[in-house]
Length: 286
Ligand SMILES: C=C(O[C@@H]1C=C(C(=O)O)C=C[C@H]1O)C(=O)O
Image (cartoon, rainbow, N blue to C red; front, side, top):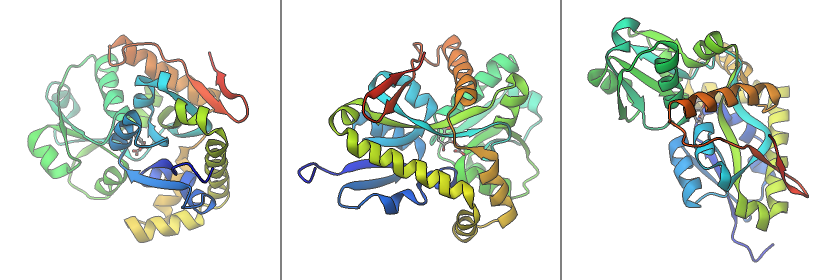
């Protein structure tokens, strides 16, 4: 094991993954495991290029390359309804935005495609899209609405700019009756085949961190207030309303999203989810 290069683990640089990483890093020795923190779109690209071995990533980007990856079981960033950090900010009434231009954050893959699905299949609308860096003021100078995700969405939601705001998790739930899974945890198949024990150690550390964090949200809430601002009540609700499991309920909601994405040709092929499991390495989930 000592002869191997370290395993690189991608960590989304937003509060939404804190519960899964908060205690994990101390369980993974720094000489064998490197944590690489980036926004989701950057991690999606790093995973594709093989710069990270295991990563939290956009569920949409997982689907695009599912044949190259295995999912780490029962880990995700999901919401049963309101997600609080995937928000469409509108300076015009919705009817105008549906016929206008929407600026999309360059940091996302799942949510920008979720917005396209909602616009097309729920509203029957076909707005124009531009991709921009996540800066709400400049996005709204160029467009009628702006989609932000993660911490920039949260911080923008605290400011009163007189904008109308739609929470995409809430809208998806009201429309379809399902929750939505925004991020998944995946390992490259090569890494899983070559270094299954280290992958299992990472899975154990992430799962244990999730368990500990959800048992007592206090330390995460304190850190969020210090690092990102806001009230403790806000963060308590934020971490409570996100769900970190990937069971049959979450999988059903995500499958519907993948089906819609395929229908709109945002995804080119069907997605067969396969999971990493310790010892036998893969489990097929049809
Ligand atoms: C809940 C969130 O989920 C995320 C949304 C993602 C996306 O849209 O591609 C990717 C990872 C997660 O960060 C969020 O960003 O707020």
